[in-house]
Length: 504
Ligand SMILES: Nc1ncnc2c1ncn2[C@@H]1O[C@H](COP(=O)(O)OP(=O)(O)OP(=O)(O)O)[C@@H](O)[C@H]1O
Ligand SMILES: [Mg+2]
Ligand SMILES: [Zn+2]
Image (cartoon, rainbow, N blue to C red; front, side):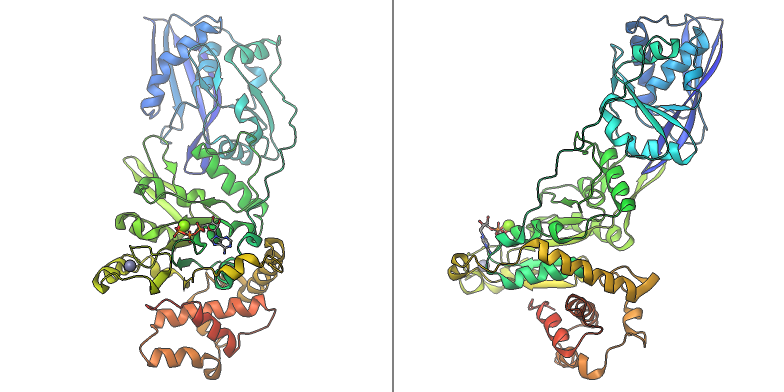
């Protein structure tokens, strides 16, 4: 008979909050009531926790047990509180001494046999605990590597409830696995593999340097998929803050590699064109899972064969891309996940997908136009680089010398990024983010002479005001890559060329 409390962590999106699991055991008919806004999984926890306690050789109090999760207004999801509930009940009703966990948060789902199962989101949960000043975390053994990424908190693991009980009685130790360094990541795919295709290689370099969204059109075998897959390899590595954010999102999604190492390379996600809206932007019941756009946070969202995606799916991406985050409305409130992804799209110029490209296609123009219409629209409006790629010539495939590898390109990209960051200051991080107002600011406005290639196109009705602005952004990226202070007319001309699509 008595009262006890154990702490755990509830997650909302990537934000965690330390919560208290309190248990009260009083005389009365044996029962277990759980309160504090539990969702379905937590109600199911009752039977699971009881079985786990029995099968760990402990005595389940045959009394009236009340478990409450505080603060009551915080929505709690999932099965990550099982272990904390079991310990609180045993402390309140069976004199389990919990002094050694006084400064701890406890995370983990219980199996019926008393094993402690891994849970999603351990990295952000332990991070929240550390930020709240908690000094100690006990996590499932399978989650220890990601938990150890968090600074300023001692982390131990448990494989079963029995081990934690033994630890509290002083007869057993928690696990403290010696971590081997993560195995070296396989090297990223290299642009040196892409022969010929100068324009394709250039557009990937520009996209990387300016963090511009990019769309590539071209016949089958032009190398579109190859090029897109090589973009992460020329992007700068993630900084500490970005790495933690990305790793936390993958922890919540349950897509972290078993090594649990910090994700340092810009991620790439390539959802299939049959993917649903929730696969792309996130959703699902209980703790909403981040979608592909959030798993591509600080990295690349690659929509291959983008004309084949359902239009509703593409529309659903627009707002997250503009706002850099996804807001998932749930019955009980909103879950927010970051989603600063760089968009790469690829498609054939025509549904017939003739290898020779435009020359070979004999489709009626109405079919071509209908297909093209699927590739325009509000999403494409945000894409600075839209290029048609030519088929690779056989000569290019034979000439494998002097092809610049990704390592060389990545260095130029890094320098260009630095130049842009210094120039835009607080108003933008990259040329892809910079606002139209900033481009027109008198400090950065380009002269009439320099802009002439664009004004000519505009006067001929071949360039929209939006297209004009995008070309100026790209021109800045071209100058940055070349180490020059400001774009020149030739840069503006190349930028225009990089919007070589007929529909500008
Ligand atoms: N520039 C290139 N250099 C070397 N190999 C290439 C090049 N372009 C294409 N290939 C070869 O052709 C294959 C197909 O290329 P990829 O899948 O990137 O074409 P794609 O443009 O995406 O075609 P699709 O429209 O059919 O998807 C590659 O796996 C590669 O072997
Ligand atoms: Mg392809
Ligand atoms: Zn065709």
